[in-house]
Image 1 (tube, rainbow, N blue to C red):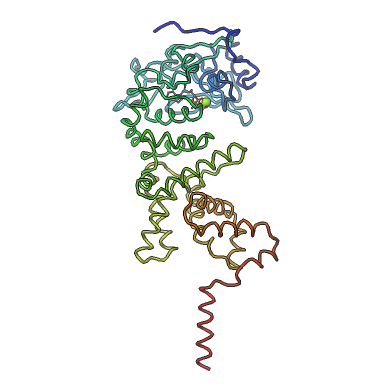
Image 2: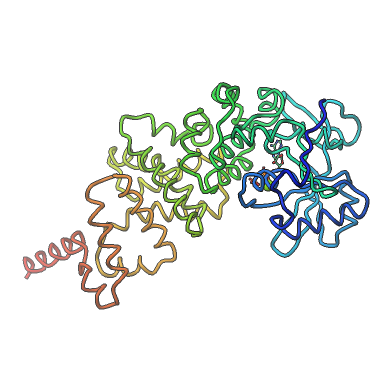
Length: 431
Ligand code: ATP
Ligand code: MG
């Protein structure tokens, strides 16, 4: 292994002022107790790029129990990776002990590789070993609290300069060890606007199928990270381009393969809107995001069932159930999101009715805003020309007071009034 490149403080832009004070506290406490302590990962990468890291990770030669003893506000977590979390109110500083090579492992702390996949990774090691087991070169840069230098073993600094995302080691082996690294590659390329190194662009489509063995719960979390990064549209493009999307959302990918381009336009528009909301600091509801990602399938299935003569409500109810059942085999969807997703979808059938009682009641339901936003999204994606007028109507009615709302509504649905008229006619006949 070659000597590291060590960049002294005077020659790089990482300043203690830009690091979270809590992370600085953790680094100093470790150092003062005689341990090595480095900032690593996204924190160093983003500071070198002039950005704002979303969290700060620390690497040290102290073992988890030693870290635990140093901090009152510390919790040990993780089975796959044993980590210390140091809590400061809502901020968590993650402290990881240097990890070593899994192929040299023996005894209790061994790592385990099954079919090329790393299922346990708990061997402690040295700084240099820790650097080489990380995923991408730009994620393996260390900021040393002892002398404020930046330490680079894997060529990360050069890749930062040329804006290249490069895997450490043999990408084929590294993807086999942990296929989620493929999704991380896409996430970082989109978020940082980096080029994927050539060996990655060739490998991704070939290895995409490895995602099928990853637990659906882990994939659910990764999907949220992918699409909540503020660069969802770009991420979506890259996932499609490198054949990964279908291993996350097979049904949606199927809907894209037809002649009609609506399905893809719809998801793309949802991604664009997500990015726009994040840009202005608005919250994103995972249920809305997932409802959008699966809508092409729900819409298609509902139409198919209606074509067999089923009425709209039961058709959509069945479509929702089938699509969700299929999806959770790929990405788990926690129950607390499934119900609101169904509500958003089912509301699409209720929104076209505009008579008094129904509309006013709908306006009061907690999920109305999400259902309405979803309607706008369908219109933006060009689902159907008649949606324009319906969207305008729902937009306007929200601006009115009660009298104004009543004035806008139809007194009774045409269906119901038809029934009444027939009933009245029948009465007249009897008489
Ligand atoms: P961000 O937090 O901005 O999303 P990050 O690079 O900090 O990006 P984390 O998921 O916080 O990403 O992980 C911290 C570091 O741990 C990474 O930079 C990388 O060095 C290492 N790491 C994380 N996940 C993996 C993985 N699956 N394989 C190898 N190394 C990993
Ligand atoms: Mg991080």
